[in-house]
Length: 422
Image (cartoon, rainbow, N blue to C red):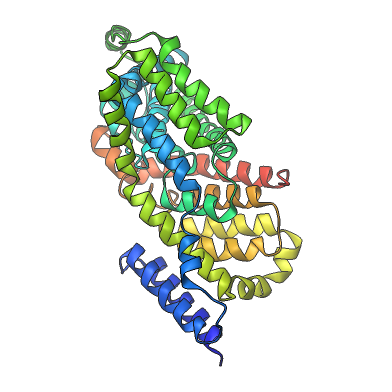
């Protein structure tokens, strides 16, 4: 048996440890990957560990920096608080209790997209009670609030696995975020519509006096800035995504625009931007670790081995095969982070036979990030944190209500995967 084969076995053992989750994720990845490549080097003088390590310094890290500078100034200037108020008011006007819960989930999800940590309870603490008083079933309210994690993970810029997938496929941020936002908004709308159908079917009666009090209380909340002003930096940022401008420069330009519109002290603003970049610590370590691991998986021939094993299905439907593996990874590990141990090797293997990198990234990220929530409502910072804030709700029934909408979103991803050929 050659040292190269031994290194592949050791890499598989490392990936298994990561999936089981009984050892520290990043240390396991770094140590296991390093040992694997050192074993492989006994067979070949052409493998350079320094080159493989440098592959972890992907340009996607630059993109994250620009986005986090932007979120830093958005939060300190008060723009983000005003945006949350406006979205929740809008949600109430168009959808009552379901509108409030949906808007709350989107707000928490957007914060998660930009910061890398989605915590639905941040907005649910304000919106959970009003949504129930406006007639929602408590479990439905908790379920919709809990959907925030889908947007934060799948639509975001800093989740370690998301960054690793985008770095490995080299597609960059932008278009994938637009696709992800569309899928998650459809998921949230599906839950909102199902909740409304439930209310009509069961003739839920709303206390009109309480309803008017809630509406008045929400409408009386004053914004610090004009609606046109606070949304302009976001419009510039997402408009730039669509036209393919460099994400780092877009983040910086949007930050400068926010400073100009808010009138905050430029020195304080710069400090806020730098403080925003402080949130990059975990994504940075994870990105370098996972991309180093991904490069080693390819270098030692493990990706090729996996591709050979799954050759029949990869030759017929590589993108759909990637989607099935991603859903399985998210479902089994119940963690987008832990699912990387399954996703990355198969992604590398699929890229051996398929050149549709965007499609592969889309189904890999979408499948795992949504399926992780199916069994229990997600990892630590998800549905379980919302339940205590929604009186009358419980985890089992709230999660049960989420599942049809999650299946609908996965079905959408699966259908779209047949039409993305780039």
